[in-house]
Length: 199
Image (cartoon, rainbow, N blue to C red; front, side, top):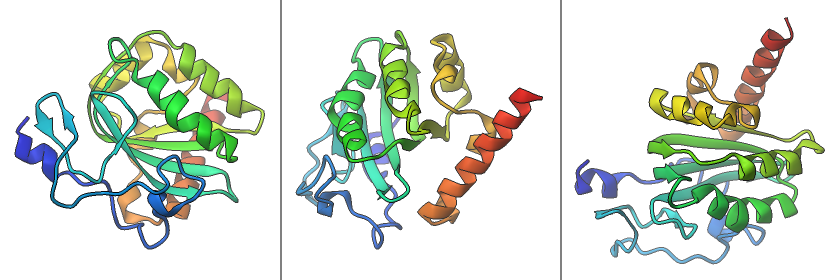
């Protein structure tokens, strides 16, 4: 991995005319100021683009790309290495970001892992807690862009019991759609998955 490659990867920006987390008073990142010139965040020794948001993990950063409070869903993009085994990244994500969003009525989550290079599993307790907290509101968690090796590692921790991921979700061309269409595509894939499991 070259540092030039890492620092050139920006969060997806084509929905900024519809939503900007730093301008949303209900967002965990409301009021955040970004530099266009100073690279302050790094994953290991590799600098990353300053538009990514910090959740206090040393290896995983994110960007809330879109939130619809009426429909109760959010689309969040990640970059780096998702490390529950050593960094306890799911704890930081759950406590620092997700709990604040749940408090604002967000119960459906689309997580984009296109730029997540590795996943190191631990136990599933935070995922189970997250799932339990949103289930009463017909909530769900999905992941798009999950690499094969990451998917296998997630299955070793039984995360498939709490999160929807797999080929049917990876096939969603989310960059070609607006957020509402992405949401509908995810629901369509999820309904098809549920139907297959029932048959």
